[in-house]
Amino acid sequence: MKFTPLSRCPAWCCALAVLFLATSARAAEPISVLFDTDIGTDIDDAYALVQILHSPELKLLGVTTVSGDAVARAHLAAKLLTVAGRPEIPVYAGTSTATQYMAQTEWAKGFTSPALHENGGVAFLREQIKAHPGEITIIAVGELTNVAALLESEPGLGAKIKAIALMGGAVLRGYAPGSKPEPEWNIKSNAKAAQIVFGSGVPLLVAPLDSTADLKLTPEGRVKIFSSGTPLNDALAALNSIWRHTNTWKGENPTLFDNLAVALVATPGIAPLTALHLEVEANGLTRSIEGRPANAHVALTCDSAPFLQYFTIRLTK
Image (cartoon, rainbow, N blue to C red):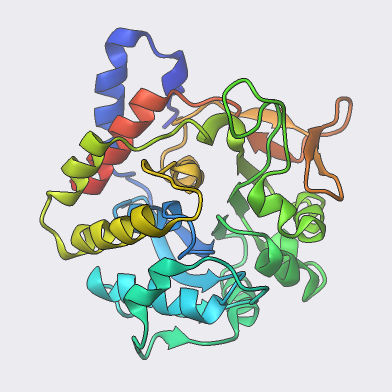
């Protein structure tokens, strides 16, 4: 089934289109996904994991964590999965890096689970890709350290990955409306790893700042999500509260950066895609190079209001 991008719909049909996209599951088998995340710093990673669990089009095979204290992040992801009633989904800590702000991980301090593994993230990714060649999409919403290590761990492994959907980069604008492109956090945190991923030949779905920086979840939207009364959404409300009162950049309304990357896999057509050749510079800036074969399909725009309606419906159904 082919969807018309919401940003190209007439205004009168947006609400109907959003409702259809949010409430209809694919007739085909769900898409197998692996979720690579730096959950625990910004709040959009937690929203993205909950979004995956609320997406019948997706089959979550496992979670890997990256950057900062990847072990603490793994505890957080595993506890959230247990609260969701999915304690069997494996969670593996991947590559840790320098200390980062991670206040949300206090919520899961001391949590244990048979599905929680404090190391082996890259090996787990490799095992899954080899066991299901051509079937798995990796959704990567943190720095690309784990994914690059995966690609370099065995010759020809990239050809066995169906696609990589990632949040990262800035093509025509930066974080602020009307600003110039700037190095985006996930890419600049390990620009060398990003260069490996963008040069791998694996099909890429990219959600850069261009289409994500304005996706602000309003207080009204949060009320709808948090008032549903489910244990999972209650846990999300607790994490959102921790984030809101402790984040070092004084954020009030979550920006759903990572959530568009999830939606590009679960709901094709949620945003228009442009085929581009993107290269990553040493400082983490992403540039579109004309005259080169495309290596990515990039969401350069996304209508905020329809996306937020889609997202709210999805997390409350």
